[in-house]
Length: 270
Image (cartoon, rainbow, N blue to C red; front, side, top):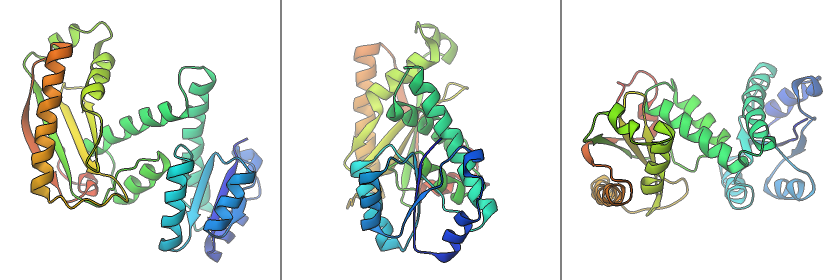
């Protein structure tokens, strides 16, 4: 069974978790409960946690998040429900992810970090395509998947076209679309001046590169300077793709959004 840590000083949240009487049937041990940053450190020094839920004041939360990012970057953070129904819902979301992580881990195909990275990649494809319907869903899943991107700051979406049709391009790769995505991540993915860059390839052949500021990383770049920096970075990455993989790509458009949350809900699909 999976092990949990609840960090909260809020009576409503503590009561909601206390209302769960059948933890084992849900696939979890009853959570260890702490109330602040120091308690979090104490518990994690003594007990393993597969998932952590936080419901404390914003200042305390930032301390805990910074500590977790430095010391436990691959432990999922799940939403703290405020009634029994919400607790069960968020535990179910966590369990789906943990089952996937452990299924892949025990099959020795990958480790927790790799599975989380793959899940983040799949999730942000959905975000880009307007399939995440609310900012609450976006924030909750980004924490669950331990994304470091800041959903509330301006971000860019860069569209890249291919000189050859997608079907012909894909045919040049022994492993098809998956191999092409690996090549894109090799050339594009990473952190640049406080911006996380994530390339995605879609079923219709579109290559879309999402660039979003990292949470907690201060940058004095304006939207214009960020756009200029990422245009240069993308051009350099395209040159790398040409040199090492023989692919002819070019930028066809750059869209600026006030925040990643602008891609949610009823916004137009990109």
